[in-house]
Figure 1: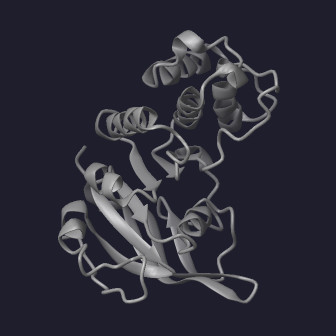
Figure 2 (figure 1 turned 90 degrees about the vertical axis):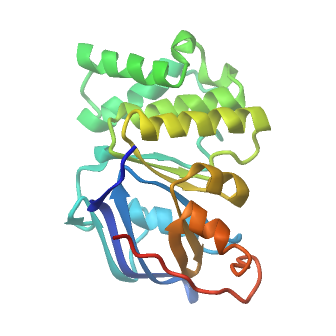
Length: 254
């Protein structure tokens, strides 16, 4: 996928956020370009998930501004352009009687409105989304009867069934085995390269995400760096992100 550096999907400027009196994020400025695959890394408690929630409008800004598709987040309403797979996406009541197809159909209800029934076009999109993640044959299974890796794929299908332009993943491989991790990263790369989705993925696995993503944003309460994966690796010896001494490096796209 070719990144269009001239088109910003998300523009973050001088953003800060505090929980009560504890400052979590300070002076974050970051642009996310169309077609990018951005890995967000940093130590535990550094504010990575908080930053994602701010971009999704799930938390209020304390200061600074966020624009989504050129519009201030306070005025933004076209949330179907944004997909989200939270860290606890598969943490639900396994006895809840909902099928795989019904889970993915939720994205269509969200796009059209709660009291609208799915039509033929919706059903085509639901089928396409499940086939993209290789879960169509499981469409009539109860979601609680699937493995963790299969459930993860279903929630990715739900995210893309809303026909977004950007999808956020928050620690999507936590608690899954290596095979499931490998399958997940293969799927995400295909979504980026073949379907043109912009990807933002929060990960604690720095070694893996630098091998997968195009760019890395390192967050430790402030933006430590925003650079290509290759440049991040080259600077990794001076980026002790789990310690206290951190060398700030900044990368500006031409």
